[in-house]
Amino acid sequence: MTLRLRLIVPLTLAAGLMMSACSEPEPTAAEAGQVLKTHIDQTMKNVRAVDVKVTDPGGKDIACGDGKYKRTYAVKATSGAGSGNPETVILMLVSALKGAGDYELIGTDVNAATQEAVNAQYHTRITVSSPAQGKIAAQGETDCLPSR
Image (cartoon, rainbow, N blue to C red; front, top):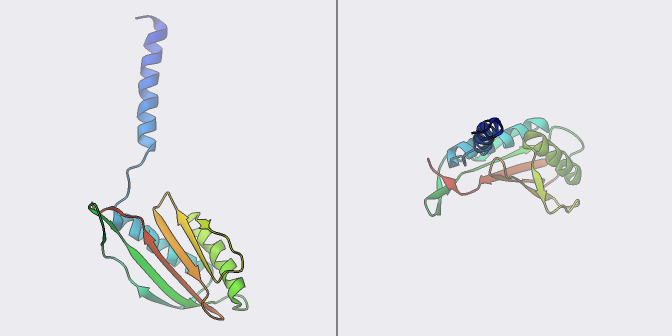
């Protein structure tokens, strides 16, 4: 074997191993559910929400079929910052959500009282809303994922 081949073969193997190490395995529903909860709680903290009430504690696998499951989590609260105007509250919620987990908006109607966003890396989808003056809500679910 020539010197050139002796160098290329190990480098090719090393590159292949590095690429396989970069592709992380799909999380379980429980793992993604914990991330979902953390991102929603962080979003509420970032907007200085008060009187936060958990409306869906999640923590349970919901069957999707094909041996996969999803998790959910939801909260409602009162806005602790700004005027409480629903349009302003939505802008604050979207900004806080992006800061919590780098979410991408689905549809960007800037006048909407509800915004939906996804994070492909964490397999989560969160909807934030301002259903009334000074009121905020966030609910989310994971993608359908393996249970183990």
